[in-house]
Image 1 (tube, rainbow, N blue to C red):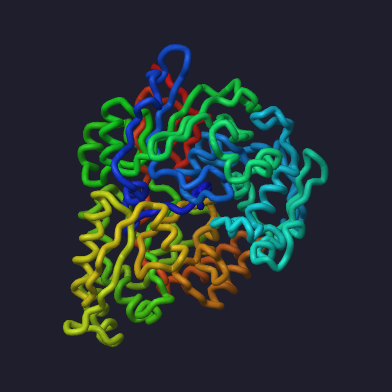
Image 2 (tube, rainbow, N blue to C red; image 1 turned 90 degrees about the vertical axis):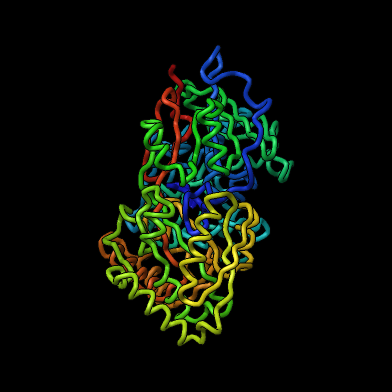
Amino acid sequence: MGTRPLFRAVCLSICAAALMALAACGDSPSSKGANTTPSGSGSEVVLRRGNGAEPSSLDPNFTTGTWEDAIVSDMLMGLTTADAGGKPIPGAAERWDVSEDGKTWTFHLRDHQWSDGKSVTANDFVYSWRRILDPKTAAPYASMLYVVRNAQAVSAGRMGPDQLGVRAIDDKTLEVQLENPAPYLPQLVAHQTTYPLPSHVVEPLGRNWTNPGNYVGNGPYILTEWTPNDHITLVKNPRFYDAANVKIDRVVFFPIADPDAGMRRFRAGELDVQDGIPTNQIDFVESTMGSMFHKEIFLANGWLTLNLQRKPFDDIRVRQALNLAYDRETMAEKVVRIGQPPSYSIIPPGIANYPGPVEFDFKSMPYPERVKRAQELMREAGFGPNNRLKTTMAGGTGADARRIAAAVQEIWRSIYVDVDIIQNDAQVHFANLRAGNFDIAGYAWVADFNDPRNFLFLFLSDNELNDSGYRNPAFDALVHQADEELDLGKRGQLLAQAEAVLLKDVPAIPTRFQVTLNLVQPYVKGWVTNVSNVNRTRWLSIER
């Protein structure tokens, strides 16, 4: 969402190819019955969005994917929210104050309502933040809030939720106390994990509160339909504080993880917006779809996660060999071919508050020399022509995923590695990652907020999102030292040192920096391509 930011959360990608292409869960579902009113016709303005995988939940305490965030963020709004260009602006809070040490933030809420007419209060944020961090909730993305005082201890069960550093001074004033200064907090509190929840609905209904007819939000839209693997329909919330400026009356999200199907439906006029294209048709798309195709580098990176809890990936020589032999240029320029720059680092270019880039020292080494060195390392680790490493690589489904995986298989054969490919839909893939049920796994991370820490924190020893099982006290210490540094320049240098340690240890193999792959019909106005790849329906309109 990790977005977000992007607030963007985790996005699946086998070898980090086209993000949603590789989170595929089958062919596109039927839209029958979902949208009988053509976009922009009659008195109702309807927007139809191809939106990647089927959501696992619409409860912001349980969502992690960008495809989930796109829907949830049309219904709920944090203390700040994303503007048309993805940057944070006042949301539920009209303004905020920050203490001199940067550790106490006071948010002043605007006078606005839930969609059922009840007033949104500071206690709605307190309730939500305590709930996501309560270990009984088992929220997969709770670590996003660890910057809040005592959040990690609450999440671990060492403290009760009432010890969390957030309190309602009164109905319209929320105080947030932090463990350390966080210059990125205005972006973080626009992320789905920080959204308020209507306790008067959640408590009596439990998990059923997210059903159509039950869902209560403070955002521009209300949930009216959810047909699994077919469509989700939202309608304009008349009680939204800025409803007068919301131009789309109804938005329909279609879980179309197969980009081939998505593009077919877009070209047939069944979709107004489609997230993702088939990468093998990039030349056709760029030559025929012109201004409808929005492709720009944004704050996202793809990598192959290595499970350091399994042999032989606990051997740094094996990790180094796989990293050296991975042919980034061939994969980016000949296999994927959608303009994704090869990545030799974890943190993407253009990120704020960072002096980078910090990159692998072998970047300038000719590829044949990299392969030769990788073979030497594999032989030192006990592998060779007569004792090949047999392993697995997990990723998404779909044609793009199969094609990319086949290329990776071929690349690693030269260093005595035979890879079997495992393909699963997004929900199964992520469940296996969380459970440590993988050898090598495709992964991509889209920034939840524009700051290098949002990439590095994934590898902290005590982070539940650290799927590789990587542990290095020196890395942890540098990140935590940076957390306490108020000077942004010095903070950036410490984070750069931390990334250098991380790259030396190779818990993951960076592959390609990501690009947006959005198709937008010319009559859809207000679409702004941005580094967060966030385009909320609130800011869009249809003009024929």
